Length: 55
Image (cartoon, rainbow, N blue to C red; front, side, top):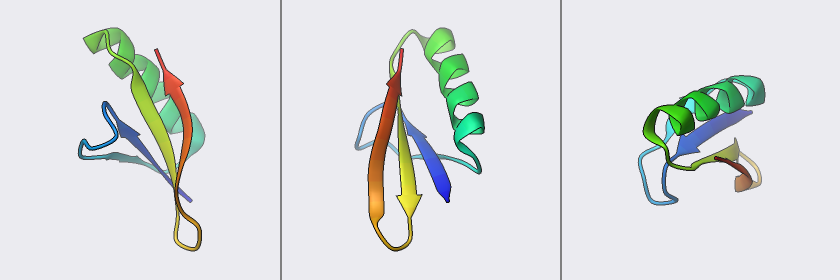
């Protein structure tokens, strides 16, 4: 499973290997830029699924 970070649903994704890595990077990015970061799960069979928003 691959996870992606985005600042907006239409932004270019930042890929992450695990959900823990995605959450850690999202928290850092949200603190650094002061914006919410979206986490998506990318599944080759089910497609894209929104996981959570980190503020």
